[in-house]
Amino acid sequence: MDLIIKNGTIVTPSESYVADIAVKNGEIVAIGTGFSEEGAQVVDAKGKLVLPGAIDAHTHLAMPFGGTVSADSYLAGTRAAACGGVTTVFDYPMQRKGSGIIETVQARKDMCDPEACVDYAFHCCITDLNGGAILEEFKAAVDYGVTSFKCFLVYKKEGMMVDDATLVKIMLKAKEAGAITNVHAENPDLIDLNIQQFIKDGKTSAWYHYLSRPEYVEAEADKRAVHWAKSIGAPLYLVHMADKEGLEAAIAAKMDGNEIYIETCPQYLEFTCDVYKREDGRNFVCSPPMKGQESQDALWKAIKTGAIDTIATDHCPFQSYEKDWGKDDFTKIPNGCAGVENLYPYMLSAANSGKLSFNRVVELCSSNPAKIFGCIQKGSITVGKDADIVIYDPNKDFTISVDNMHSDYDHTIWEGKTLHGYPVQTYVRGNLVYNNGDFIGKPGFGQYIKRVGSK
Ligand code: DUC
Ligand code: ZN
Ligand code: ZN
Image (cartoon, rainbow, N blue to C red):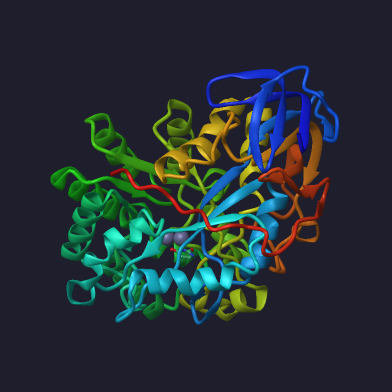
């Protein structure tokens, strides 16, 4: 045996129990008691929880966006991931006009390979069908391990948006190839209408970022995506759900038997649109923006009832000087916030405070993303799976500060937030990459995860 983690409380989506875990060659080979410790590294996890590593199914690392590039490289973003108990990240390469899917993903894989500190996979954003050639590449993309494609219903001027006909073509072809379509739902025409008026009226603070993209802007697009999924019988994954009306429409369609999955993010669970009234409101600018209290309450309710499937981060930090570009004009603020290192600790702290169960956190942050996105080696503490393991101390309090994070950004929206309980160790395939506050992994250790489609 290479590693034995003993006496800890193992948490799965359905139960918590005390047992020892034996790891060999990066895999969990046995769960039980009384293993021979000869030659093995032995870790005593008594009094601690032993959890599957989280899967952050939504990051934008080194992403060209908003006139710059997001502040975390693959190295910094995956280093931060390791320190927050995230053992796999899903990044979003952007296919551009004239480029193929595999070409797009391969280019990002080449960047990521030497830098990745945890395992990684890719969803591919589709922005153009290249006269239909892209659709013909879906099957090859699935064989390459990319089993999810993303459509933006927004970012029209940025050349990222797809229209409804393109969306439907993608959803149908994805279904045929055994893949799923992820959708960022906001309505760009309504946003532009609002922005034009606000700029004309001299209303330029971060608060108007929210008011130009309020609840109805997201709800319309959520409902449209749900409508197409229902009408053509294709699977849909709604990313970063933030509004009550869209959420309720998606839940109703799920309850009618449609294959619809809903993701939300910690920032929507913690903050409301009131943050945009703060002096540092621009630091919270992301899209979709944080919404009102009613939406936040609806998200928490859906987490408790089981209607929300995953929590991911949309990690896309920018430096303060970049956020400052929009000090006097909210339209110039690069959209995005940090979160990859905060995801698991935040949700586990919520569990520790009794807001939901630890089992449900494991389901939302690990098992469900693994299942939905075909990561068959990941997502649970089970014999035969990768030994992606987090040891969590429920008694360790931790106050988040930019100084104790492991990213390259210079500020965080989570500054000053105290969490009850914190990860103390993270293992990726049986290798210790984070130990009590320190990153001890190696760039390049992270591996590309070739995912399995549903066909
Ligand atoms: N939203 C953000 O806030 N940042 C990156 C991309 C996105 O859709
Ligand atoms: Zn998005
Ligand atoms: Zn995103």
